[in-house]
Amino acid sequence: MKSIPYKLTTDASGDVTVTNTITGKLIAVEVAAGTLTTATISVTKVLEGTTSVTYFSKASCATGIYYPRIYAQTNAGVDLTYDATRKIPVEQAMSGEINVIVASGGNTLTGTVILHYE
Image 1 (spheres, rainbow, N blue to C red):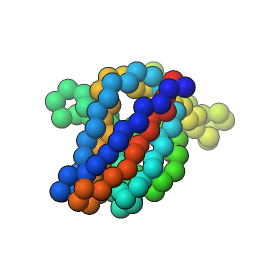
Image 2 (cartoon, helix red, strand yellow; image 1 turned 90 degrees about the horizontal axis):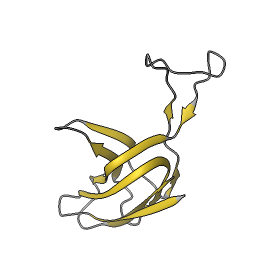
Image 3 (cartoon, rainbow, N blue to C red; image 1 turned 135 degrees about the vertical axis):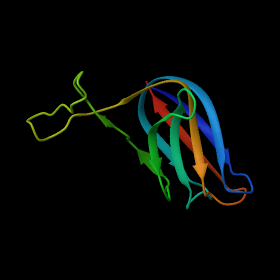
Image 4 (cartoon, rainbow, N blue to C red; image 1 turned 180 degrees about the horizontal axis):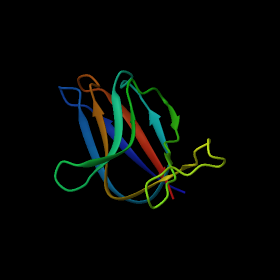
């Protein structure tokens, strides 16, 4: 497993975006909130134009390890299940410029987000 840390310091408006290139499956998002205890933290990728994919987003994100998943789907876009009721969670594939975004964090506050992937 590989890990990449995103060191975060918000600007005067309480926001920051840090970008790194990653290719792999997102296993976990580790948050060391530091002083960013009321911030919304998101992990995204901008596609073409203003369209984006959100891999993880959590308001008032506390220190911890989070395991974001999506549901496996058929080619028709129908969620797969184990037994017609329990959906099958899977890791999300990431490729390209992956952003960690902090919103409403407060003036010049700091924290770290580590993305674990394989």
